[in-house]
Length: 42
Image (cartoon, rainbow, N blue to C red; front, side):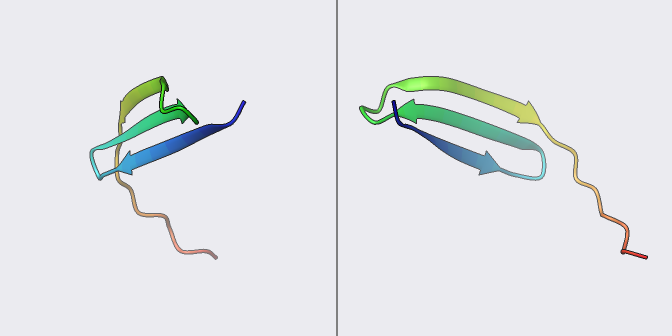
């Protein structure tokens, strides 16, 4: 079976929705997120 995923990313959260080819939602979830700055490579 084929699935598709959508992401909605913001500085405060990340939401994901997974659905099948007929549009039936298989998974919907939201996580809190923290922004950080990666240190420069040495």
